[in-house]
Image 1 (cartoon, one colour):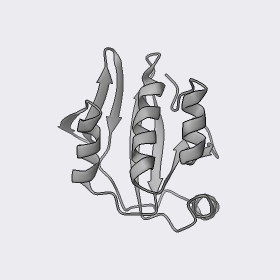
Image 2: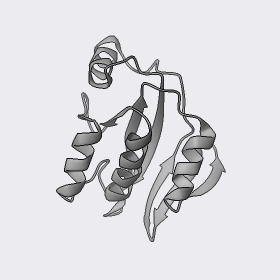
Image 3: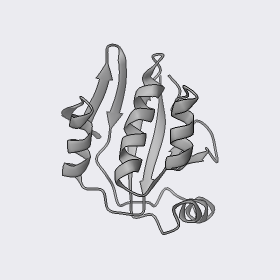
Length: 136
């Protein structure tokens, strides 16, 4: 079983820029239905969906919360599927942190309704605490 994490940005994230980032972290392009790339470390995996500008899944309350956290309306998002293998959540955290250093972004861990939103500072704190996102 995997967990879902959503990287939500107030900027347009392009396929090429995201793929360049994933490759810089040791990931590979993996065109398959719903995913453009994969980041792996042994049995730990994070599958990365192409960036999307369709934010229709955010209801009005979530949109307001995300906009407040970003300081601007969201323009794109990237869905990560994080494997349940221990350590996969740390791999996802590394990717989210690298992305948040490039694009203004909040990260929503979708393990439950109203999942927490992490900005760059919160992601850095989580990494310092040896935390993870998305389970695994």
